[in-house]
Image 1: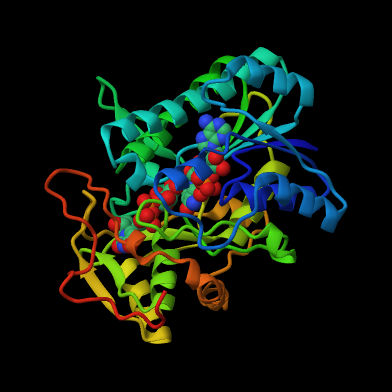
Image 2 (image 1 turned 135 degrees about the horizontal axis):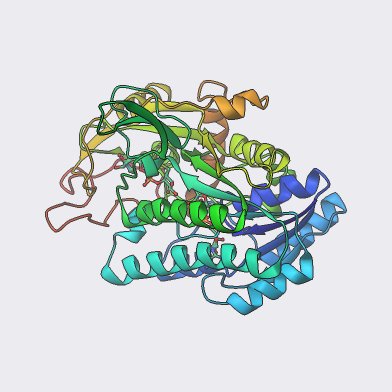
Length: 406
Ligand code: NAD
Ligand code: USQ
């Protein structure tokens, strides 16, 4: 298949592009490299030393004998070029990772709220609009988020996208209906994902665009089969207060001897998936497209749910790291339960990897190897959801005990 990977230079996109190329697909990465520019803006960088996109692609060709093309394009603004790109490459599938994906970054300032909305909504709409304009029958696979549901389950397991309800007519009859699960975003970033879902419903209804929306949980880990082949292929690893996600952050903090920054009580429960499984699920979604005219296909892409304090305690037990209960910089429920259905991927043969399968150790090995690159000043979460919130930093009077001076 010919596959365009939009956002293919990013944390999920890069290993996905390599996996698809490895499986024999003809892959083109489209990316405006905005994520690398945001690193410069935030004066931070990936814990792992990532190569330039040109060096990455040259290394992949040298090692695998396979070529991945690269197109530098801003999908949120370069509409005419995007249409030309589709006509030039005639893809069977587009995988869409190309969004601003950090909730804290999206809440950092009014400028960044505007940027996130403009980038994500214009980007997603441009893709759908360009698919129709091109006249091609392209399957769009979008990386969405578990956060579209909010994290409360009203006592039931979260279904995969749609909710069966009954409405009462004037005669008192209960009539069945299927609706999109009610959106309940917790950040500007998550809000853009709930709005992407409406674009998908419209273009699917009006133009019969074939769409798969993957509601993915928090991705952890860093390396996959292909990124491990050579250091020049290494995947990015974010640990900073804006882009680092919770489990990867706890593992870096543990390696650094920095107390694990649990926001509030740590009673928040979230869905998780390892990067190797994320890559596998995207491959399965590509191999199992909806039929023309079929409604938007929605999969929950998550392996397991965990309460944050349980994760922190597990890591503390294994590494001796300390736990710091810090103020929660976010406006979110202090505690929640979360049960999620993930039957659709399992029905396609997916066997999810869990935390207990040696994967924590693998990440700890990576963090230990590159901990000299960690800037501990970048660890606290400084982005506040409201003016009443406080930064998620440990008490300055209690200095973190560093295992190594960095
Ligand atoms: P990332 O920031 O590492 O990668 C996104 C890539 O898209 C970057 O390379 C960036 O330069 C590119 N990009 C952004 N805007 C663009 C634009 N307008 N035009 C062209 N390229 C653009 O993010 P990630 O962690 O790889 O996430 C990828 C997708 O997966 C996102 O849509 C995110 O919402 C979703 N997702 C991620 C996670 C996670 O834990 N990382 C979890 C669930 C869902
Ligand atoms: N948290 C801590 N300590 C930290 C960092 C975070 O306790 O040091 C808490 C947060 O307050 C939150 C939870 O951990 O309750 C998750 O935060 P996160 O930054 O790991 O994840 P989130 O902001 O939800 O976003 C990430 C990705 C996003 C994706 C989402 C999937 O950045 O792209 O959509 O996970 S989900 O969480 O399922 O919505």
